[in-house]
Image (cartoon, rainbow, N blue to C red):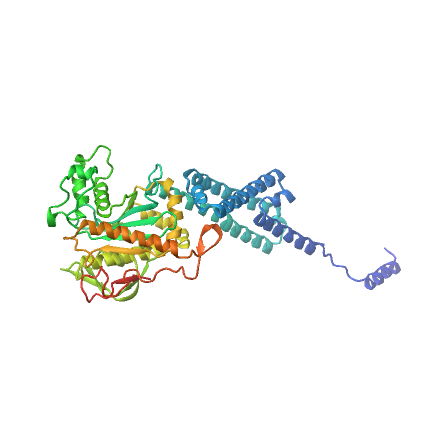
Length: 499
């Protein structure tokens, strides 16, 4: 048996000494938590730095080089944008640039995934308490979703953009401006139910100064008659006497006639209807037309829905349906139109004149132009790309997009002059062609003179301009209530406005 006195001494010493608690485990847990969170944050802020600090240094160095290359490329593009916006757009819109950007973004999405998962592993989550492990896993999943998923989404967006550009625009050399102007024929066709083929009921010619961006928009009634053609043109060969058979030979009927007589056009003619209509407008205006854009109103509905609808101020309620069967009405006042109602508002014929319908179509087009701002395009690009397939047809080559986009930026900052060759300016069934051409020349000269005398707004970075006075024109159609050429009746004070 042991010594009882020795046992008593030991018990007294134990009672006198304080109880010591082992605090190493909580300290180790806090240290591990800080390490795991820090490695993830390093990866988010500077991809590859976590691997350099605690993991595969070769992977870390590779990621840092890639990151430095991306930042350097972005800086170079930014500098190029400051020097020449057109050059920057040329680089960005090139098909090879888009392809390289697409694959780069997909590669970056994979690299983000690898780096984040590896940083999570380096944080040794198996040594953390259960609550910390769960929180760290949630942080990882959110980071992967935002960074890797966001980059992959950007890659898909670029893929859709590349596909849309290839399907919408042709390939070939860009055409030079004619006398310092780009003349683009804008046609609105309607291949809706009950109609045979596509007929361009809306015919407008946009003449834009290549330097200033100031534009004049000439509108023509689809019922314009007595059209002759320039000597030496294709249509002058096919119709030496012109399209002059009275009420049976209207401007918009040329498209259908040419499509029905495609075998009479020179071999290799892609779209006889466009050739005939273009040469008719060239003869009427005396201008050389470089490009055309044909919009099928039947597909316009899906495009309106893709951008979230259009804001249009309706002055007179507009029927939905035909004259025989009106299914409903678009009420007067400020309206937010979805695709169905925007299409009916543009094409409705019941209880209105053709000139009023032309005005409504321009309102809808103007509202669409205003809606297509960069933010809307980026946020809805997938739907817009899908909606535009089959809606637009154009001969604009992809190589011309940078130049035209640069001009378009200037155009949006300038006042657009509108001239409509309808009553009372001219009678489409009885007019003097010389008056039309002289009116066109005078409108262009006035626009150029205004551009030369108006002080340019203060330039900002990238060659764009900014000014408190450079605001969109609210009134899309009516400048002088009661006397607008679109109004075929004197009591039609206003048709509509965009916004």
